[in-house]
Image (cartoon, rainbow, N blue to C red; front, top):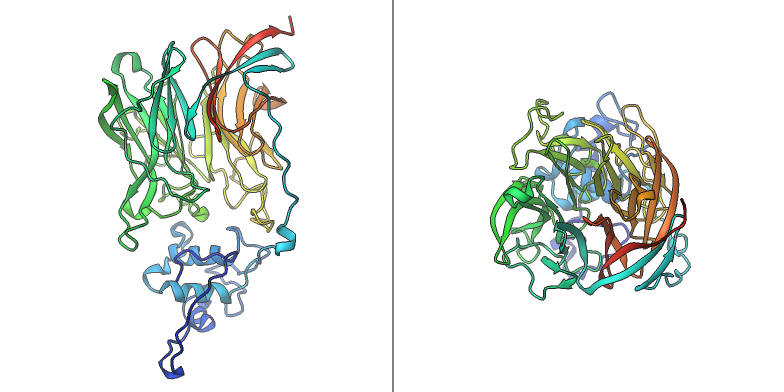
Amino acid sequence: MNRFPSVNIILTTLVVALPLSLQAEEPDGKRLYEQNCASCHGMQFQGSGIGPALSPSTYMYGGQEWDVFRIAKNGLASRGMPAFGSILSDDEINAIAKYVPTRKPASEEQQEEAAPEPPKFDPAPGKVSTLDYEVNLEVITDKLDTPWAIAFPDANTVLVTERVGRLRVIKNGKLDDRPIAGTPEVLVNPHKWNQGGLLDIALDPDYAKNGWIYLSYSHPIPNKADPDNPLGMTRVVRGKIKDHKWTQQEVIFEAAPEDYIDHFWHYAGRLTFDRQGYLYFSVGDRGLLEQAREPGKPFGKFHRLHPDGRVPADNPFRNKPGALPSLFSLGHRNPQGLAIHPETGQLWSTEHGPRGGDELNILKPGGDYGWPNVSYGINYEGTILTPHTRMDGVEQPVIYWRPSIGVSGMTFYQGRQFPLWQNKILVTALGQRQLRLLTLDGERVQHEEILVRFEGRPYEPAVAPDGSIYVVTDSPGKLLRLTAAVERKL
């Protein structure tokens, strides 16, 4: 049986013709439900004082068969929902999921959409007109493979991560043919929608003195149940580059082995440091969306640590029973952007939503951001994800994008090249293949402008020491640079 069934996939099973007396009986979903679930959820799914009613109109975790299967198997500890994975087989849990009321996926006719037009993009090299500037757009290199993140160890050097597992060096505008040797092994699934690999890179606040470089990536461990399909989870390490080699590696964050799974999406992995030198990083929900608000699980969270991996004494969940002490906030889906506001010191994040529901958030210690119980998005195939866009105790986004733009990386602009953009937010949009500029009025987005349309999908914008803006894109894998040609305003 498929360990992770989907209602959108039809499994064809070859059954050997045997006498009926020798064929294994399929699990009886009704009987299993009555034996294991009805005492909490009611014989007629009406609910009780112990468990909620099971109704497609009120489900808060997607509500399709796969969602019911996953929740029944893994449980929800903070809500008193036991994990039945150690009691029932996958076949038995699947039978229960087929028996209880669920939301049905949209029909193929409902899902069918017109073929998208080829994306229009601004040629590079070339010039782009914006409200404030005419901008030069140049290609530093087009020899990268799925680049994801950028760092500047000095004014003449750019470090770029490639999701395939390579750390590349661009010196004085030229790409070194040799990747940095000895970087961590990463898990890259061959599926075309793989999101794992070598992800973010960040320099220690005291990098000039200590040389520490931080990396996040999808870390593999063996899968005993399926040796050809390793398990993976977001991991954070630090090390140094000496003689073009990655050395002195230390593990800063690593999840428990039981939290490694074989999904190949939603690793998140964005890194940043605040003014006090604390390290923040995101871990996506990994497809286990109902775990995003479970404080005992690393999924769907922002974490906060000292640079050496120690837990700060004032972390908001440190002294809460059953919670991971590294947690800073919870209820996140797949946060791919993270930056410190240069004036207020607040932590801001962009969060990649489902179909609709991309978010820009201000992160608060101990904040609950609601995923998946609260969202402005719906499921990819058009069904309801949750009936709630607001809930008591859940933080609202600064803005949300509906339809989605596929928001990914972000940074606050600080530099001499574009003074009219000082302290404004640069965000990249994977779906629209754009670089956008957000103008703020306090904690409110006052204006949004599309600056550049790229040929490939842009994963991160970064501001170089000279104030120019760098962006990495995939398909094709490029590193691009934006500089001001003409200022339009005085």
